[in-house]
Image (cartoon, one colour):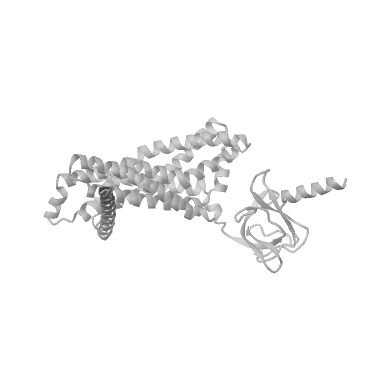
Length: 152
Length: 260
């Protein structure tokens, strides 16, 4: 009888612990969302990516459809190459889709906003985005503002 | 002058001897781990006394730590108009740091000291020598099951601590301070990563469990067989394992999050 009590108590304890880990996985870190199951990748070249990080969201009209998979510097083109992993069900993006790096809020994280164009062909695995728009760098903006002020 | 140098040398040699003895003890304990699979009942009883009986203090502390984190985080964040980020702040601090570290400190105080006192008393009343006389290996019968039990319980306790803390933060943040419930969780999910944050926390808690239980069992084994010796060993367990946890945490945090 005594042994059964220990077994029961330890069983409940281990179950609670695993349940807590499961809770951390699903509710806190959203592990299912992280492993986006089926994705296809397209790449884009940006002059300046600002503070963009891998795993940043990729959105269309604000709806999240993928994540930034990889960021590298291309030494031949002298531009940053950003690889986007987009979920396979969003296979309708036209070839001339434009990618821009935006900032969520004033101090928020940076993300990639896609704006569909009008081409009939759609983006496929390994394609390259034709039109990209760099991140806004505050220093450049201020610099431009100052020179404009000076010329007036 | 020479006396003080001699005393310094003696202290150093004693410290090194204890350190070496602790390592030999660890290796002998690891060598007798097969008992865990042969007689799982022994370990089961120890998981009960080390893990299950620490549940209450872990759950209550986790709840309150989460609630306090939400309060303090809110007060700071609301100045920047970023109260919505509260979920991320609470979850990250709990999962990465407070969960493993506070659990390990509480575990050292609650379970480690009990282990040391129990083993110290066994040694004082010569139960360990009696066992050896009966050709029962105390490493297998006594030490290894306790070690494994502590080592297994720590990550589970730390996970429970973090999960309860997140709920405590929810109670205060959403219930009391009026942060949006959806924003609390969605912010949390967008900043917390399974591999980088949650698993790092789990690895930390496994390391802490290993170290704290090792120190506790060794201190009991190494205690002077007097009532004063047991009390000193128990104190040593709590002090040494708390310091070891804090020091290791610094190193582990540097390794895990420093370069990224």
